[in-house]
Length: 97
Image (cartoon, rainbow, N blue to C red; front, side, top):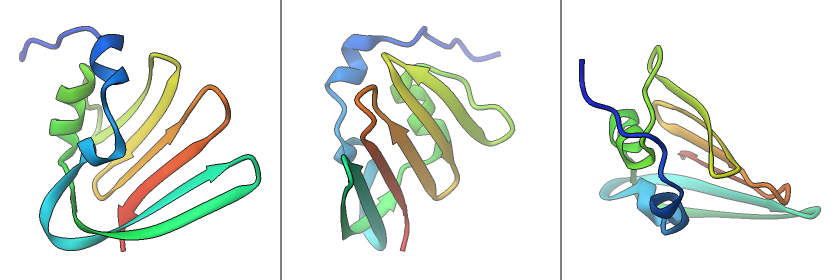
């Protein structure tokens, strides 16, 4: 069984949406919802694998998904899709375009 480190708020604080994106082929749709406003854009690249995201966050993958709360941020991830909901109610979604 692989060694899983506990969630580390110090690591998560430094993460930005770019941390989850791998440069290269493909397109991703990034949607940020904040206080009734929605910002939607498309970026070039692909989402990192579920395993890479889990390692970054210090959590385990269960049934090919991540569903956890790290430092007050609710994180739901599956292949090709990442959703984050912050304590202030803002939401961010990154998915294949």
